[in-house]
Length: 388
Image 1 (spheres, rainbow, N blue to C red):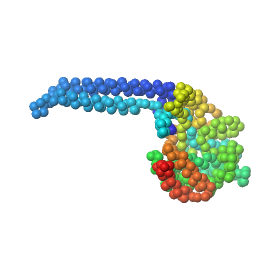
Image 2: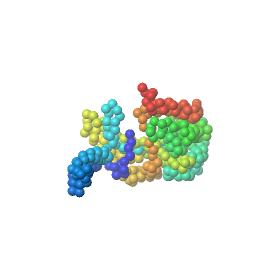
Image 3: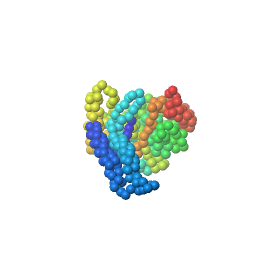
Image 4: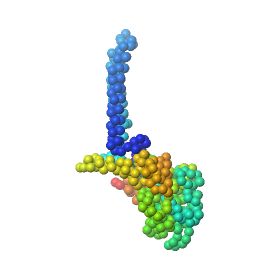
């Protein structure tokens, strides 16, 4: 689960967040009481003092006043309920079957590209730009850079790019190109749109046509191992991998944004890491203490990815945690984040699309064959038809 909050609330610990919620609710109650007093007492009194209109010779002051009281009591009650609902800032959600929990974000795991500076230096290739959306760093520039960084043959071949081949890492490419896998309603599958197909095909061509990215057989120990052994210049990954990178004291690395699409835009997948406590736990106090620690500044400062607390993410402790890496890139990703597929059937959805995408990357089917086959299957999965 992930949720957005104003900057002020994104920088609060759990005790502070709870206190803010209580203050907001108390303020809403006072406002509601004042509204009730005005609507029920003051306004009808004002009406009763005004000259009474006459209908068929009868004054209707009393009738009008009584009607106003009834109407305004109802309006005040509605205002109170709406006010309370709008001021609760804690995130509470249900996973079904009686499971309720409160969730608190601790980090955002940003996808991006890691760079091995040694290969860039050895081949005399400039490093990519350092900011999201730089028009000089588009898909063509990315491909040409990957080609210049690819050399050698066989077991010693060096690749321009390696990385996670899971289909969710296609989101930034598809979104940036104006497409989507699933619309925001989390039901409508559109992975076969022209914009999406173009992105799928561009990425598959990195492996099958341009050969700047390894096939599975060329990365038997994983793409990260190729990157760490200086056999891949760029590694498409997420920021949890920077924990490993910081441990490699002799490895010269940095981070770079995804390239900008022909739309002039770039988007990124930024799933939140959250901690949550089960509402019916037998150990509520211990759970609460753990949640408070995980939401503290000290804990979020070293969380994988970018700290969820605004002040921590913008502090020198984070931005200068290592001297030669562009940590500001992670902070700047805020405006380009998009939400991924949210569905109780995501497990089946993921397994189905993952197998199909791996088949494309292995050269066993084309992108057009994949999307044609996947659209009805994935649509049925998100509708819950296959789980019955």
